[in-house]
Length: 591
Ligand code: ADP
Image (cartoon, rainbow, N blue to C red; front, side):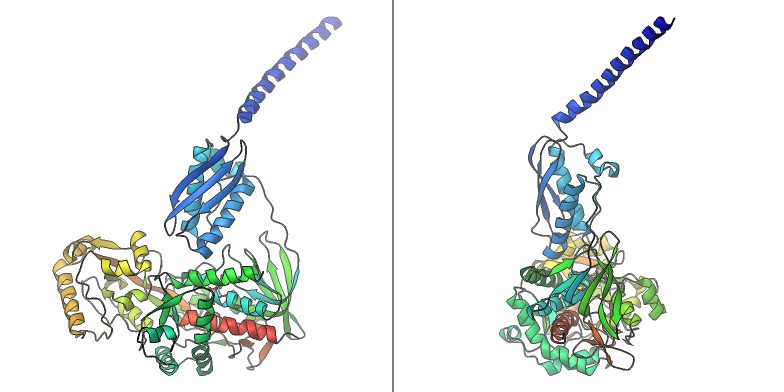
């Protein structure tokens, strides 16, 4: 019995071994399958469409691994698409997965990149479903950010922060930039128009007579005389140098056009008509790379550190969500406005509850709050600008330059209702007074051929097309006869040089040749003009009007430059002029 029992046990043992062998055979079959690999080794290409055109991914795989990814995407702007490219390709390789999120602020570029890589991997024989399954993602932990000690810490990588960082570093100081978003550029990336400057060589070359005095007067008038005179004078006086500085770095802001609320054409835009913001962010970030200044992305400043009444650093949170300290002799806050913080907007302007915003997600007023915690005073915080021409579904902004270049606005009755070149607040109010608070920008193909931004809106599906006015009206749902009548009248005004209906002064396009386009628009929250109270050297002032030692601020988080309404083109001038001053002042006051 015992023996039999042993025999039985041995037999069972053999059976189990055989089974184990089978199952190990099964596994080894899988392993053998894997030996054939997840991919067919080689280099493959995938092509997709991003924000600004074609995206090509060149992906090299070994049998089990995505080895490298190269993206070529000329249409994607450096700061937006470029930032997304590096992050996504690094993440796909690190996690060996396609279960990656789009990069906030660069969603179209990101989606295009992911699609191009997917198409390339498909050609490599990959199991795309498995690659897109988050469960198969390799876990990668970012290194913890250690405490840092620098001369100047800059918070925010928009135009103001980048300019401040360049200047402080050029003055011989060590500098770091903290940026809470995954890409640099903030709202500056979204600046579509250009930079106002008066009395430049580019204006002269185009026969435009202008002066600092006229610019100052236009801005004061546009700002309802609420602008801080000293800050405005500083803007006007320093803008020519700031423009030269950008152009010397390759920005090429040499095309001068007109925008609302201006007596003369003075908005300097990129020569090829591209949106200004990405160009500026691109040249400044390249400069910072040259100067070896680090920008810590996904890194949020949370609190200013004070010692003996002076700001001596920042408490921040790194990409893993862990706290670290930046010890600094000076802190420059350049965190932008609060246009994307609906609670804060509502707190200061209950009447703007529920409005869309043109702002990027990071425009939440952090710098204003942090500075208040160390005693900073505020100025005109309830001055919030709405932009007249944004997409009624998303708040996406259509540049004011379109109206400067010749676009007109019609309402749902197919009639004009305003001088299109009045200041933003007035045009916004005039649109809100129309049926459903909606109007249509009417442009034609001739304008699109001249203007890259407009060409982009059309390509991205914001515009409805009609070969002639009647078919445009039909497509949009407007009364054809009325629209034809409106357009014919307007063409007549342009030809005679006089807008007899609304007194528009700059009449550039006759708008008589098709094809035509209509873009529906409504106003959205655009710019928060109030903010921290600063002096002309960018010192942040306390409630007694005294500078808070070690603390500087520049850009949209400050108040006073724009008063009660910002003129298009003045924000870019503001961030570059005062960003430069902040960098210089902070560096020069370090003991
Ligand atoms: P400006 O036009 O004044 O330069 P932008 O909006 O272009 O302002 O840029 C401000 C930048 O500051 C944005 O990129 C935004 O994400 C960043 N930012 C805002 N709050 C913080 C914060 N708490 N920490 C780090 N970066 C921040």
